[in-house]
Amino acid sequence: MKTLLALPLALLTFTGCAGGVDMGAGTDDANIDGKADSAASAARFETFTGTDGQQYFHLLAGNGEKVLSSEGYVSKQGATKGIDSVRFNGTMETSYQLLQAADGEWYFNLLAGNWEVIATSELYASKSNAERGLATVQGLVKAVNEAAAPPVARFQVFKGLDGSYYFHLRAENGAIVLQSQGYTRRSSALSGTSSVRSNGPTAARYEVRDAANGQAYFVLKAGNGQVIGVSETYASRSNAERAVGDVSALLSGTAIIDAQ
Image (cartoon, rainbow, N blue to C red; front, side, top):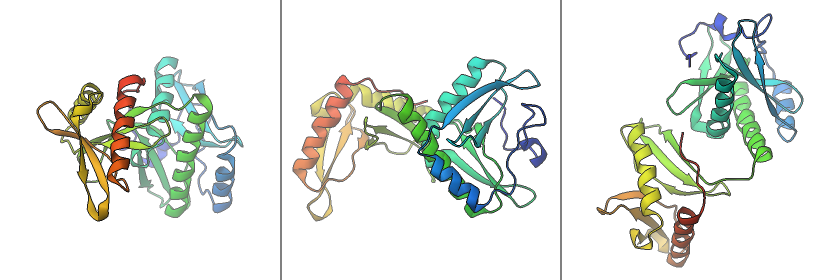
């Protein structure tokens, strides 16, 4: 995949279709509000063949407005995998990179877990507009996912603001039920998800601990005693103990999607 991070502004208008893809320079508040309203409508992905023979996709809001455009792929299968990557990464705010173009306008990239660019937004007249556009696109991706398939439990790996890699486990309802420590490499975080899979079904691997003000949380340990996951904080120790049972059951009997 080609990265767009180092490309000059002129190349941000893709060569995928005749005359390039209009990035919507100067998007104003009215247009952003229109996209927000369309988030509840039938947003959709479309793939197409560019004049250069490569395969592209874009994300359209319910009103038909294009809000994300992809790079070029050599095959339709590659473009389809790109869409899958948008579906997976596009729901996480940490996957977006907000940038300023050379002429002072703003746009954002959606990044995969390896920090390659998956798709790029249109151009916005101001940073605040781009931030609102980013939030709208994130909502659109969530809406597309919810319309396309029933909710599924999944692991997600991401890079934190401290530069370390983390993973968390989301239940079918989207709640984050377990989060990891920081890792220096993404591959180590992925290995951590495998350890959670193997140790999580065993009740003896969990330890409920007291937090402040009578609250409680639990940790999941590997066979060597190392903590591999930490829960959220619960209002009482009994609530944390019930949550242990829920997470253990989740890891025992549910098909969980691997982190990408």
